[in-house]
Amino acid sequence: QVIALVGVPTDIGAGHRGASMGPEALRVAQLAEKLRRRGLEVVDRGNLHGPMNPWQPPQNGYRHLPEVVAWNTAVHAAIHHELQAGRLPVMLGGDHCLAIGSISAVARHCRESGRKLRVLWLDAHADFNTSQVTPSGNIHGMPVACLCGNGPRELVEIGEQVPATSPDVFRQIGIRSVDEGEKRLVREARVDIYDMRHIDEVGIKRTMEEALEGLDADTHLHVSFDVDFLDPSIAPGVGTTVRGGPTYREAQLCMEMIADTGRLGSLDIVELNPAYDKRNRTARLAVELVESLFGKSTLMRGPD
Ligand code: DIR
Ligand code: MN
Ligand code: MN
Ligand code: MN
Image 1: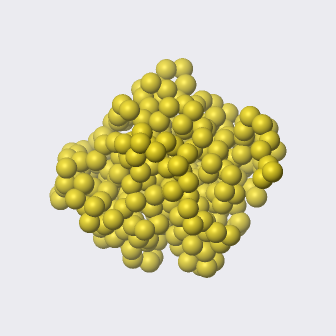
Image 2: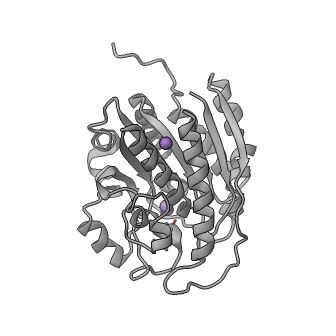
């Protein structure tokens, strides 16, 4: 299967500038070349285009809502196009608001092809805020809520079916920062959250077994990888670091266990912010982890 890289150079939904440089940082870290070296076929579609970041304060609880709609409309069309053509899309963000466009496209494709959807949300944050409870107005803190129908009409309606998906398709892993009002919302929606305490208590292996449970031959697995999932000591190049995240080895095992399912159908790599990084090390780490996600491992491990 051909992997299609789709760059989305914007920080329109974030509270810090610089995630717009994410796609180029991943290219500089040789994402395409490293995957090709593994024998995979990769096409780089270049970057999507959209409005400049006007850097305005929030209005009615949302910062840059019209611009966020414009970018996500472009993402939805591009990702759906790749899926329709049988390719495996990798969205190079960009901030995490762009998951509204990508996951709504994946959900639409699953409906059209009669497949089930599972979304692994690797993140320090639950991204389940609404305009009522957001502390920031930044829409990168709201994509999961929007995808579940809880958000402004213009965003909730991207992807035709409203809501695009439902809380039960999500498994959130690595969570360690949930805002006060957001806690009530994730609880009410019964979002399946494997927070850092859960990982501490049962370990990353058991956590991933739980999150991946019930996948079958016709499940499409989407991974939404917010780079702030990782501990800031290994991944400083993000706008909103939260200490106490997965270590290098925990992250590797997480990616390898996803690869082992053989069900990966699409991927977002978001929130990478080279302005906060040193010598592109966070992009290089992200590329290394994505190699594992696509099957790289130390030894060959068979069923016997
Ligand atoms: C915070 C930060 N929960 C907010 N969110 C995210 O502003 O809603 N940072 N996603 O990466
Ligand atoms: Mn996020
Ligand atoms: Mn389709
Ligand atoms: Mn995050």
